Image (cartoon, rainbow, N blue to C red; front, side):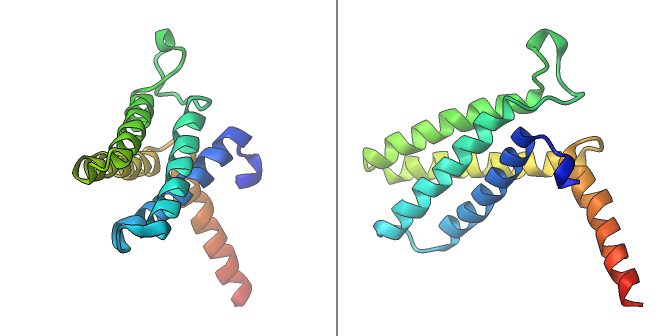
Length: 144
């Protein structure tokens, strides 16, 4: 399946996966210091790529008069605003607000992933519930 995915979709999926993993690391690891800052900037970059690449993706859920954009694209706009606000507050050393904006952006990432996985007809749904089971069955069949 991945060979048949358009490049913008592959970029979007890989960036989202990187953001999901880096974000989890940030939430679980100790805060402060150079490592937190470095991983934070990598997460910010992955989130930017995820958000911006979404504007090249369209689905059947898109609204014709909105150039094919769907309601989930509003989440990308929210994410871009969240990232800007989080960076602003981190640089202003207002870490309470920084954490709130980061938490909102990460929650949006998780919610978007759940929606993309749950809705039939979306690439992530097909990968998880069609292609992956097919690969598992094929691998198991080769063992017997």
